[in-house]
Image (cartoon, rainbow, N blue to C red; front, side, top):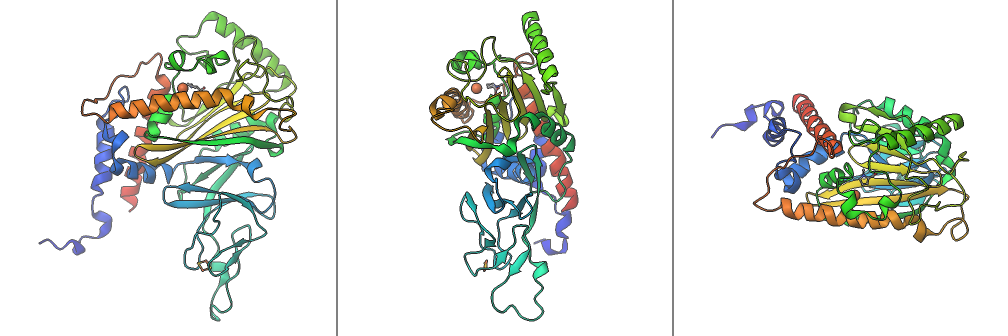
Length: 425
Ligand code: 3BY
Ligand code: FES
Ligand code: FE
């Protein structure tokens, strides 16, 4: 038998990953993916490593940790991350793992604490991750400064928090800068999450994103959403009518006069990050059952209720609708090859009072219904894909260009990240 030990581990080819990269390279982005990408644990594991453990992820809002000592935890695959407001008011992220014997440190999803204390042997960390106290006797040569929490790259862009578990994350500063500028009118430091809901969809995470990236399915499935949403979000859209272009131009002139950013910006490979403000349907102000506002108090410095919806896309895990009175923020978290969690947060002015300024039922109704409808669609999509009859099918370049962009980004990012990790390892 060959002695594998004589081959240095760095030169053993990473066959599973290489096979996935090769299959993506051979696959045209105009077709839905081959079956294993939607069904198999092996593919899922590689996607978690190459996408979710490397790329920037949207993880929440700074207003969820408003004061020093507020923290929230996030599970990404097997890794738990703590996002904390430190003693200087900065938002930071750490691996939620004690440097003593590795216990999980913060045990709740949200909380407030003066110091981060491990419940096992009480090692105690400052909110900036430095180790302050390590039990009674670790020996004379114990150097506390070497046992701070492992930091995680973290960015706060105008109140939207992103983390990356990579040692060397992709630079998307151009997006973070634009996002901070586009979110400035909302003053997210003075906002709050009024309602948060999480649903689990029995479908692969990419089917959840694919579903969100087109409105080809909207007229058949989303009567509540179409009360206010215009089906396309780009004046360059091949379907955009003159009437639509006129509506957009007239609203943009008003937004310009008020210093409300609206221009379509996109960054990264295959428009990985996009921000654009679009009018809602004539006569509607918000994504509610009657199109009227859901919250009496507008957000931040906003005076004009007619801001349409600012859509923010961040691949691989978030889309958003920012209106004048509230923001709806979505976060996608893969749980398994055929299981995905979708969390929706409805964000309002921090001084808006429940029952006085807004009714949570009314605030959440349209997107709650839409989420349920989309869950049915993607679960049925998954069921069909599980069949021996499934074969990749064609996307429409007119109606599903957003899906093609996503598949393009996914395929490219997987191939680049796999290539980089196999040359590095
Ligand atoms: O998030 C959106 O704006 C919509 C919902 C359905 C399709 N997608 C583009
Ligand atoms: Fe945390 Fe021992 S594992 S103090
Ligand atoms: Fe939908």
